[in-house]
Image 1 (cartoon, one colour):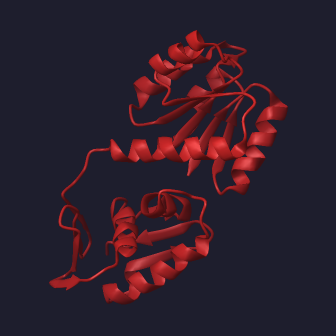
Image 2 (tube, helix red, strand yellow):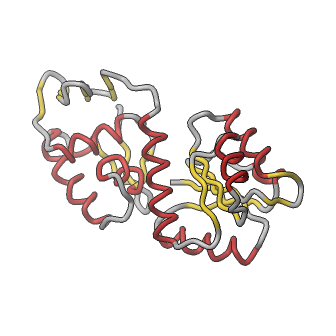
Length: 218
């Protein structure tokens, strides 16, 4: 899960980056509006509204225009009601006032990422190589054979199948299947092992060491 941290205070940025990295996120720091606009694509932005080269609400509006599905949380010392209202109206999904606890920020990050996932266009049928998933009926077939999966196994497979051939991080799988990244990552590995056995071909789900898993399409 990639987070873009837009924060001009280097000490605050270093502390937040370290805390988020320990929680399994990949963090890119941008200290200015220009750096934020030039940053690589991400899943969520933590946005300070006071920047040295422009107002953060304008940046929020631009980021939202670029990607309507992007998660954006304003993280700022501006706690007045008019500031919160302005930030939300300019496109922020949530608004956190400094100082805050990491537990609160973690919960808000997860909530925003869940909402972003739910608003993505839904497919009734997802096909990835030999795997066909009927999302509405929650059924899976591999080739001509129907496969019986537990709820978590189904959610994990769907998370992988939505990015066929692409690497899906453990954190993304945790969020899709459990609704949180605050969970033992070993749990994912155990369920993946069971899923491989049920799919009939262990090679369908490939481990990408240190990153996550890939559903092969060939």
